[in-house]
Length: 458
Image 1: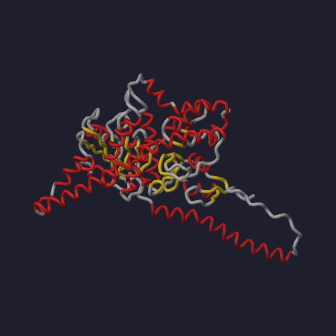
Image 2: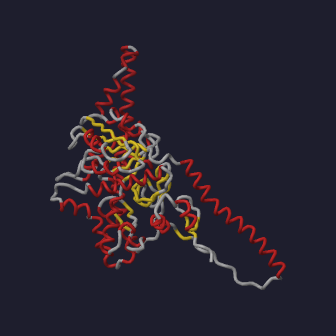
Image 3: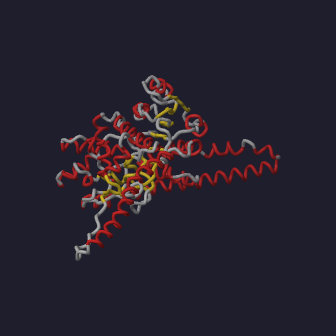
């Protein structure tokens, strides 16, 4: 009986388990390889031909020989393909352990433990901690603290005064970065509407994103800035307008996956390390859709328990806030999830493909942005994977989530349009002003006018 083949979601080629394991053996543990194999779609066997009339032996022998030769060649080719694929990937991959990572907001409640975890990643050669001078501790202090770890990475701290523009101060910090993690922004305060929160945090994110566009345009930007459902579309569209790859802007939704895995492990008594539940949609409330039907362990849970489990994942953030008496939110678990995301991005950049759920520009639904499984490779996101088969309950939830998510995405798109329009107006007005000064006061008079005008507009 021929061994089962499954389609590799990255290149669409079918491999046997042995072929897939051969490529990853020595890089990952067998359990991890087995877990990835389970995410690959099995190739459906073609319908066999019915038994016909027996042929003469000589003719049958000739046919067998003719058939054997292509089969032998096919086997040789199949055996060679993984090797060729491995060689090709080795050429594309960056050297492992030589990546520069920056944590913007690295002195905050999420930023400090996230920086600690990233500093322990063997793929990180240089770690930069950036924050404002009003942070709970100085980022230089966090960097000095982390520099004492028994790890090879060099750690540096950078601070900026409140009100200053990151693009004017982060050249050294961001230049050469491969990954920028952004746990920045303010939490939602009493009386603050969702729109108020978005406007405040979008402005903070925009400053960092603009600096990244200038100093590390090829870096992957992992956004932990609420509301993620609106901030990511806004920043991605701004990147697109600058002629950069919008797929570099990625919303980190890993915490939803981590929570779903943990909660299912608690219910079933299984190790959550071997549970892998895709969480699609968005990263807030009902837009969070765990696909319990797509994991071997969670799919065994009774259907009548799924709605409550679904709600538990959606409201997990509120549970943490209440447990902390309103004095904090999910900082440690978010740092853990952010580091898991960062580790996957760096592994992908090093040529060791990883699959994670993330919120990014997408075409798997009729919405332009969506959270789903993606493949991280040598350039960041190399492929957005389809949603797969959904249960009846999950299909209904998807329709509900899309209705809410659509409005939140539009908020981000409108912001990007407004910023682009403002930028054009400021540029045009500055050009006209400079032209007027040149015509009335001479060529040298134009120097210094536009920068001052731009500062006023911001």
